[in-house]
Image (cartoon, rainbow, N blue to C red; front, top):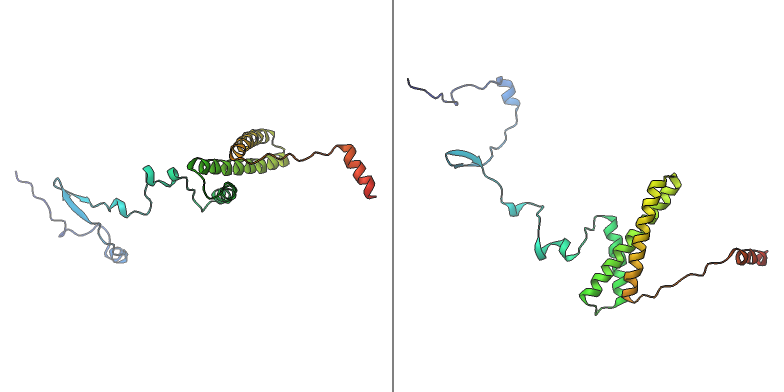
Length: 171
């Protein structure tokens, strides 16, 4: 018994002719024969817009942040301030300390904002978590600032008596 393969080009489509006419003409994907089968040709992986880069060429390794996000813009603003404070002839270690101080300061400020929002909403769990993050980030920031040689300035806290005496003097 002999099997005959039907030639598909002679067999009509199952879709009605007016439907076939309404379909857009799409270019057929490029294919090549591999092991007797037609497989699509994949595009060159280097031509893709997004590539994962590892090693020393990675932006994450170099410490660069994506400037599309406000967090990274704030960090880079603080980083510029710390680098100006340290001076132009800084070592790699001082540069890392500047970056660390900028990130800690940004995290402390962000957690302080979240703490205020949580207190306003009367959400004690979120407030406790934000307070712990703020304490840790502030502690780390103070330590890094000390290593950079930035002196700690304490602001004088007025007592209630001093405040009342100042108000009486204004009246």
